[in-house]
Image (cartoon, rainbow over all chains, first blue to last red; front, side, top):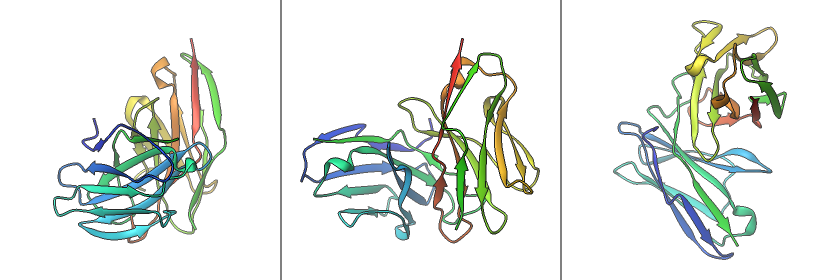
Length: 116
Length: 114
């Protein structure tokens, strides 16, 4: 158990809908990261928050947004869903907000999103 | 830009035989490298990380990786495979910047035959 929790585990929805994925980081970790894992794109970084502020953006679509709350949990909002958004979405957390050898990230179990 | 390339998408070994999963990296300076493992329907778990303190890095479950700057490689090895080692393995580089973005290789599926 990494100490990172994600809800829900599975989500099935229809095209055009909006969903919210939730993540609670490990106790003491200030950084939260979101990654998308799909068969064709592999594991891709979406966005990073550090202590409530957006720190970095990756290949995140404009239809997607995220935020980190004062208690450090994070939500990833996906809207106007398309079939291609079906994927496994991981949240990770780390103590530091920067790169390098101390950037050890702990991953949650993921949320499997299926868009029908 | 930093990147990692995993040279094999699929590796099959027999139980009790050595494991070698290959990874090459591209970086203009000293990289921060990791190996993560993903078991079926599970999240990712850190196996080991390169901290520049030693070129041979020991991880969990008997895995090791050797950093070779001259070859820009960070291959993962284990002397004797166990059935429970069957999983997806990712070679990862951390951008040495003010962000914590991880860049993942495409992954190598390790199959262990009895």
